[in-house]
Amino acid sequence: EADRRAATECPVWMEPDPSFKGLQSDRHRFTLNVESGGLVQLRRSADRWTYGGGGVIRALIGRGFEHTSVLFGAEFGGGAMLRVPDGGGTLVINYFPALPLVLRVHDRTWHYDIEVAPVSLFQADDTRRSFGIRFGLGGGVQARRSRGLIPWAGVAFAYENYFPGARPHMTFFRGGLRVGIVWN
Image (cartoon, rainbow, N blue to C red; front, side, top):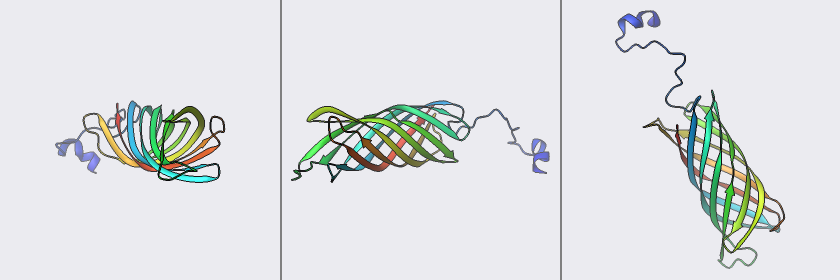
């Protein structure tokens, strides 16, 4: 009954437009996604564990579909970790460039990420590169669009496996908060 009477009795009634993509999403759009966050990290190498913290920034180009988006781009992260095996309070600075490929599933204002990325590692005092692969999961909630930007905040977790080569085999577990903006 409301639909039948709306066009004549409702002053703000607008006919539905099936081609309208919505404003609060990246549906059927190309986007630029800029994301950053802090990380807690655990590393296992040579049967020893160490820990540290750091941060990451990345820029991803995305394409939205109905309820998913595919994003690809460049990332640069870094962090300080306790030096192992000598320890003693000394730190080693690690740098982590990566090329992430992200599948983002949207559920209203929430999104859930599945990520894979080739990664590399080098250190401030040892620029030899180690190469590996990352598998990650994440999620977040986005705010309303404002001036063409959709801000969001969430969490991300990743497992990275570095192959033996310049350094012995290493695995990293990372997790932390992440914030970002989506711009189209």
